[in-house]
Image 1 (cartoon, rainbow, N blue to C red):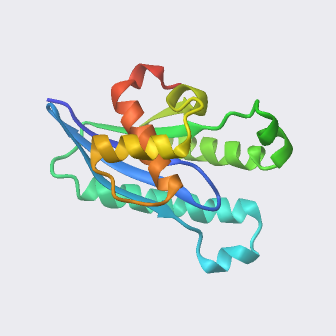
Image 2 (image 1 turned 45 degrees about the horizontal axis):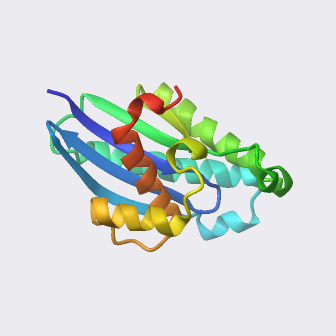
Length: 170
């Protein structure tokens, strides 16, 4: 029987959303969600160093949840939001390159660890739905009680990945 641990990530080098889902038989649970912030010392660092710190915190959280899974998982999947770089706002922000570097750093680490990373473009998993609608859906579907939109997006990405795995990009 498949025992899956699914991590969902809303990538960022400022505030990274993170969610953990357990799936065993027909039972699916949101076990945890949070926002990963860089340490205070990171404010004086360049973006590459902040990215390293954020990804290190992310992998520490993954290790923690793998160690605390009720049964040894047979599948570890990581659903990662892929930003839409085609919008005018993204093109003018100057930060899209940093965000894409974050996404593919996480993806590479997951592959090296033997996990299955799946990329979900924003337009695929969320479309143009406002954040408030996403938050209402995850409250309804998962009982989410958080308040941060990065955390909400991670739960939304995970929820979408569970139902639409085949739409993820490998």
